[in-house]
Amino acid sequence: MPWKAFEGAFLQKPSRLEAMMVLTIVLVAAVVIGFFVLRS
Picture (cartoon, one colour):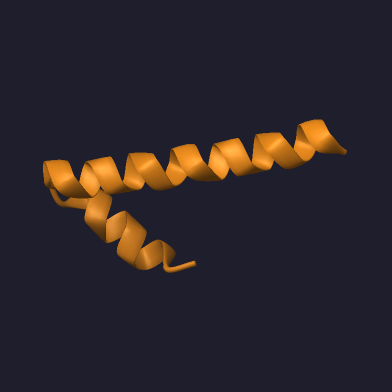
């Protein structure tokens, strides 16, 4: 995971598109993790 790039993106003022992309990725990851947790 490129945490350095991630932190750099947050230190700068992210554009709306970047914020939406990050939120979408986090949402998808949360749904996938929740799905596997509930299935097991």
